[in-house]
Amino acid sequence: MSYRRSVVPAVRLILASLLLSAALVACGADNLSTETSVGPSRTIEIIAAEYTFNGDPGVIAAGDTIEFVVENIGQLDHSLEVLSTTGSSLGATERIPAGTSGSVTVTFDDAGVYRLICDVDDHFSRGQAGTITVT
Image 1 (tube, rainbow, N blue to C red):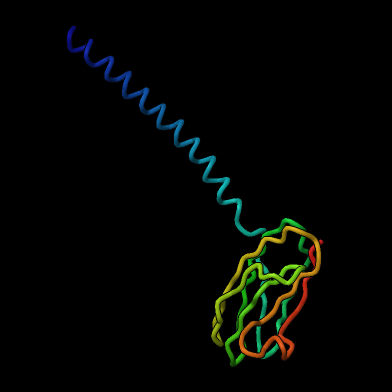
Image 2 (image 1 turned 90 degrees about the vertical axis):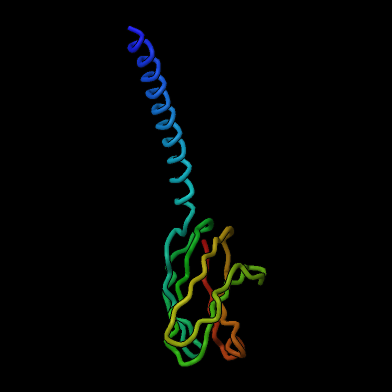
């Protein structure tokens, strides 16, 4: 009988620990799924070449988070910087060497017209820029 008396509380303690662990994991899983939903709403592909950007941003709504993936098919380095409606930088790629890609993720909080520019050397002054409209 003494064996049974010492085993039953131990089994109960193990079961209680397992239930508590399962509850903690379930709570943690909810937090994890919330964090993963914070990523980009979608990805927009941009082609960069000498003094041009090409791509179709489609419709972007205020509040959207967009990942811009820039493929440099030109011979020179390029970059993509996203400027707000007031001209401040919202984010930029690193310098993208010819034949490679880079990306930048931006959240568009407000509706308006935003600019995309290449800030490498004199590319912007040579016309490597574009606009996107956020509704």
